Length: 84
Image (tube, rainbow, N blue to C red; front, side, top):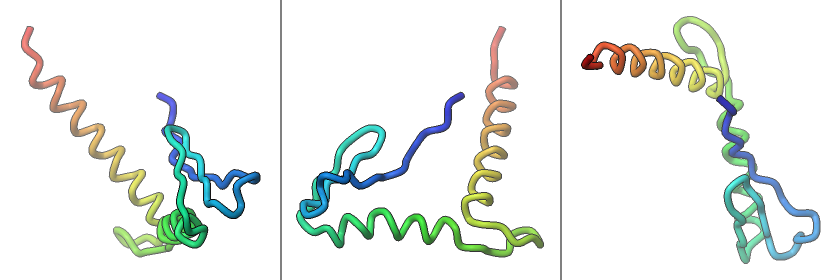
């Protein structure tokens, strides 16, 4: 399975108008400061370190681990609910 790319990048030719491109859509904002916040705030929050289960990890690592646990749970549940 290919991971989803949720990154937002700024187009180099659109400095004043705040045009940002993601994998699925384009964002056009009148205020470049708002567009910059869309990029910087999530990046800062995801890379913050926190203590989780006695270990220090970034929120990104914690989220990734919890998503894996949820996926395994859903797969086991789906296979036990199967009717043959």
